[in-house]
Length: 308
Length: 242
Ligand SMILES: Nc1ncnc2c1ncn2[C@@H]1O[C@H](COP(=O)(O)OP(=O)(O)O)[C@@H](O)[C@H]1O
Ligand SMILES: [Mg+2]
Image (cartoon, rainbow over all chains, first blue to last red; front, side):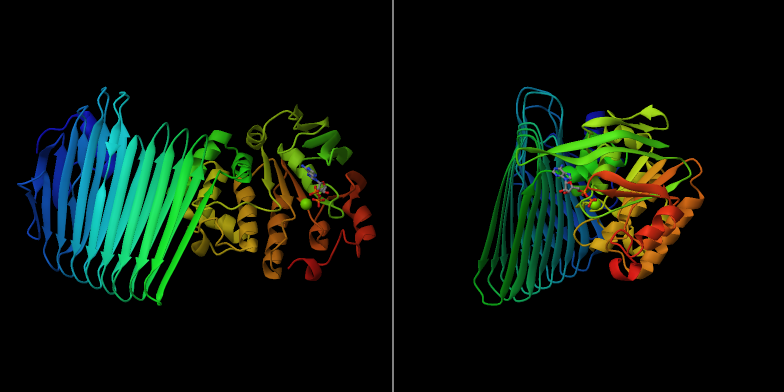
């Protein structure tokens, strides 16, 4: 593995809790090059030849294995588009840890657009964890535009945890999913924007098979002058269950637009949307202050609990 | 020891000044359990909020252990040892019962310690410690968690505003024991409970009757309680506790 500098190491810790080379299969992408890669007997990682990115093939029946594919960028002005395709075999049960950390201390914008496609075989289970993080005090922006496409075969389960808590100036995240019969999708999104940041998160989930279900929950905090748009659409094309929830705390001069969307094309599609936007309640601050916290400490506790 | 001297609190109500608390003077010495009772709307919760610093008096002074705290913030008063269990506790999305107890204690709590506080208010710790303090808790559960946060603080002056509201009879018995236990160990601290409950009035050292923003009666329990039995200021548990 190539030596990483201390900033690259710090980014890796932030986005993937990585302090050393991960167990199992991995590819670490650093400033548009692979800084290390390992396939295992069941998980094969091969670089694409036509575009930047990887093909990740997970054998049917693979159990309790993990794939780490973190991306770090520390070179100001870098712009890249990366395509990673995951082929997850029937009955496999794996954890995929992605994430991108950008440190930009220069004048030029740094941008990583990661397109992830998941082809999830019958009865397979995938847990996908993705953290996005930005640092550095350059005027150049840290931009992340992830595109995630999920294709789920019968009886498969995909659980996604996506978090962007700090430092990303601009993000447009689009997630689409197509679910066959009995497939299940669970999404937990955590988002915090500050400064002049902008974050747009769009979901389009098609429940195509009988008994499929989706639960898409976003919790977000918009502070300072930041802007967020949460746009979640669930389309029920069969007897199915769909639920989306967007719960936001607004602070300072933040702005939030929540756009719920439900579409039922089957009489047995049961779809539900909940959305709430509000500031931190004064009584919550008061209660924590009666426990000895300052107003600022109380605010931090409330936010970190909310985004947990 | 807490000393209130000539505390008044006015609010603007429809363009007119309204006196909610009128010239109240009151001392709660260390080692004492004082129960404040009186009709609804009499100003009891307002008095508690003035003590905690959530409201500031229009006139008068408040001193804790000899220090004038009238102009101190909520946080500063909390750090000097005032604890407050709200009549209507607030809910938090995301914060767990354990989070709140830790913040209250001001340190990490191991599960066994946290369990002690929860057991004291009749909650089975295993079921509750990781529960979020959100809308999934019933009013009674929330109320007990609120009381547990004040127990976890171990403060020099603990104020409980109608702790029995929303608590079932079995837990009410438990609660009385908690207050009796606190009563035994309060040599250098004081307790103020706002309550209409005869059983709680019965464990008081002193009783204060607050009506229309004024102290109507004040004195040792044995002097005051007999005159209250059967009035709205002292109801039996079976009628009001549930
Ligand atoms: N900030 C305020 N503004 C206006 N009215 C208030 C305020 N605080 C309390 N009050 C009024 O003061 C009276 C006393 O209330 P409270 O202290 O809650 O009484 P108690 O706890 O004895 O039932 C009530 O009529 C209430 O509506
Ligand atoms: Mg009251």
